[in-house]
Length: 321
Image 1: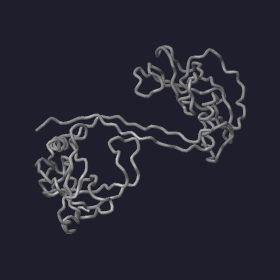
Image 2: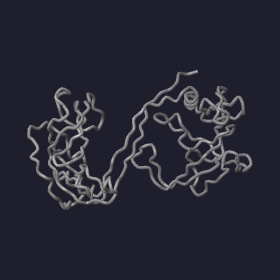
Image 3: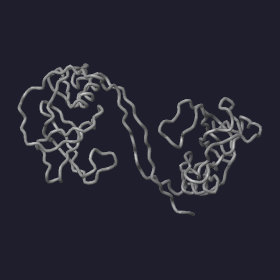
Image 4: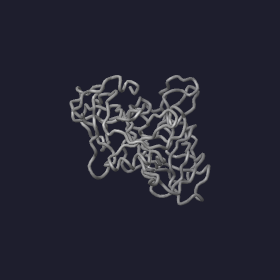
């Protein structure tokens, strides 16, 4: 038995959001070195601004301009910045209540060390050299000696030339996945172009990929069973939306993803169907794996293609639909 596998994985996608009038004005204002808040029906100034009053739930658009200076209300030191964080050197995460606002804005403070940071310290915005209409237009906060002048925030129309109407936020999760004993054996077998499942000692069903336990009986599984590699399409869908920013899914649409019952298995796995026009894929179609070439992804079938055999009878796979 080979060692249990472990690998770093990344889940990443761009999240696109359209902006309403309040958020559009706020982000466009940052591009113009102007910080806008919104006044609630009760007279409280909120920064960052929101579109609905948190007390009455009514829509609010009473925009006001607040100062680029403020006071740290709380903070936490970050000794090891990660990828794409605002500063490449150690910094403090801070909540800053800008002068004229009643709420605090989360951002970063450029400071030489944690001893230089304290709750109640005065700070000001350091603007980014290039601004695009995003929260990163505030490069960071920096220490500031001035005191608040006590003036009330002035009204602002929220109107700017070429307003920002949408943003793209990259969402990313980096993690290390350890598949465990059963799936490690399955992945190791794939390197030899074999597909291995495990049989439940109680119900005798064979599960691929194996989970180390029977999902029906709840008992541990250990008996390895080689299945396939041929199988039968049980159900399928036609994909009409091209995957964006995903190099290993650069596939022309439309294409077909299907649930495939491998010969000898009691659980269907999913895979892409190719080698046949998408509108000719059907339930009962007999298929076989086409393995990727050497290099990244070589331990998995790239897709499944028709074998040329007659379609399987529905009764042979109906329990797996």
